[in-house]
Image (cartoon, rainbow, N blue to C red; front, side, top):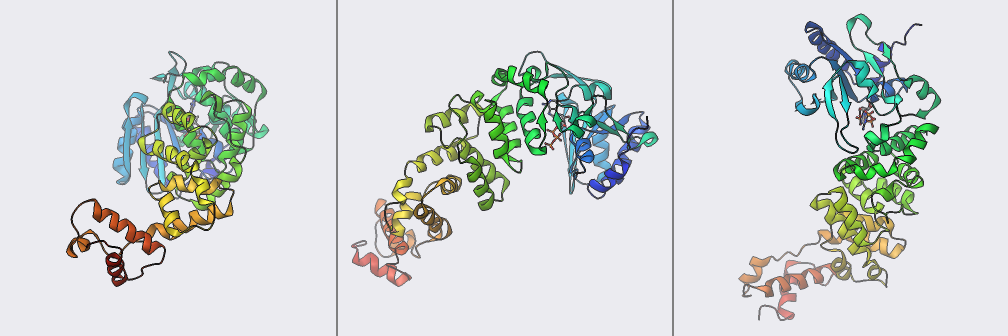
Length: 418
Ligand code: ATP
């Protein structure tokens, strides 16, 4: 049977200039008697006629050495090497390339990272997560573009199925549970029946995986166009409860996440908001435990803490028309992400208006007079200066003073500096 050739798809769907670079890489590999392949998600996406942004190369040879030479030839881009995994990557403008030595993996115990040994392409593809991610395309001049599919990936792509390659797969690496749901929801596929049975059976193995690896999986979910779909499906399968027994998906999550996408385009802020909202309906204590079990850094933990702390004060923004200085006092000091998270969840139009007023205007208001000016008009160093500036700012916020002269007059009349 004639094997499918993807050379045309590659020319169409890869970043400009990528094919030229791959030719050079192939030449360098060929001179050393090594063979190279495009593998994994890139092949899946080519077959799905989607753009390929990340180029994952598998080398039957020394991937690290090949990457070092390629970086020299390119004269651009940042080279990173990961010796324990026999991999390296090059990040160049418009081109991300990962080089991996074809390898086989063995798992000493569930949840641990595998130990790796160089091997043939065949072994490398058979250690992968799902059949649709276990295909390769030859980049070697003799058969450039030829699809290599030992595990039935093409058939599963056609049938829309996420299938693991063997029964032990989720036990070897339970992060594949999150990955299965993520690909299923992203591609509009279904987890194949036998795979689903094994997934359900091995759910507990999620507890053997380090917080750092689970966090990475969550970050991947947050990078999806619709993370809420992944969480809905994951919740149906009981996956989030393996993170924390009281972690339940908020009923409004889809609406909240859609709002997040409207207010924030920045990837980091979005991720922080998605996570804060995922834990929004748990107790503050449970949210803290989730942060600890994921090994979140200080900043991310602080955002989740602050989100819960502000949530408990939200009613104060709803009572009646508030003075701008009162709004300021409630919201000042909270991380912007915590404020945005609460803006996302607020049901009351009044609360939302007040928060927007703060974010758009109030937080930028400054007094004209500074500490030095207050000393110059005779005030003594110490806490009095801070108090005076706070009063002055409140007066500014509430429109009682508008100019520097107003501020000076207001200070005198209020008894400061006497
Ligand atoms: P995405 O479009 O999400 O970037 P990708 O398939 O490129 O998809 P990566 O996480 O970059 O995903 O992984 C690259 C390849 O490495 C996968 O296609 C898969 O073949 C393999 N892989 C990644 N994670 C695992 C895992 N936990 N177990 C087995 N194979 C994996």
